[in-house]
Length: 222
Image 1 (tube, rainbow, N blue to C red):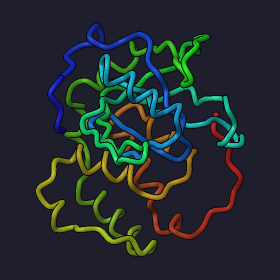
Image 2: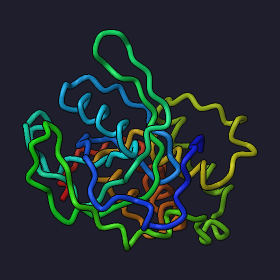
Image 3: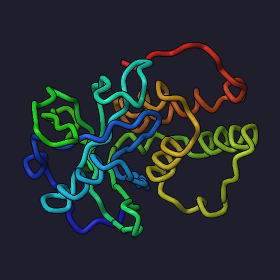
Image 4: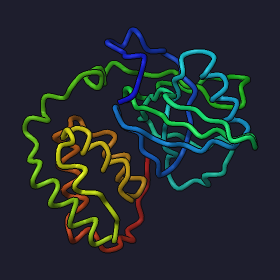
C-alpha cells in the first residue's frame, strides 16, 4: 500500500468527509482503486481534498435509482480512501489512485454549499480496519485460489496467476473482491463483511461454478 500518511487510530481521521457516489465500484481498506474523474463537481471535490487531508469517501448508490440523478440515495456503508496518486490530463480530468483506509457508516448527510456531497461518518465499528485482521490466519488460500481460477476461466478473465504466488493473502482477497465483475449488491456484501474470513466465505460462494452463469434475479441495494 503506497501511502505516506499512515493512520494508527480513528482519532486521526475526520468526522466529516466528501463522498463520491459511484454504483458498482468497490473500495476496501488497503485496496487500490484507480479513478478517472471528469464531472466538474467531483473535480472540485478532488481539488478540495488535496488542499486538506486527501481523504474522500467512496459509497455506492442505494436501490435502483437513476445513477445520473443529482442526489441519489446513498448506501449506508462506504470506505474512506486517501488520494495517493494524482495526474492531470490537460482536458479538465484527473486520473487518480485511491487507497482504502477504513470503512464507515453514514450518520447523516450535511447541508452544504459545495457542489459535492458531504457526510458525517461513523467509524467506531471499523477501527479493526487499521490493523491486520487476525482471521486471515484461518483462510484456506488453496481453496480460495481454486474457486477464483474456476470463476475466472468461466468468465474468460485474464489473470496473471504466477504473480500471485507470493502475494499476501489479505492483498489477494482485497484485489479480487474489488476487481471481479460482481453486481452492486454483491460488492456491498463484500464491503460489509465483518472480517476477512467472512469476506473469503462470500468470495467462495460468489465464485462457485454455479454462480459463473448469468444471474438475472432482481436485487436492491439499501
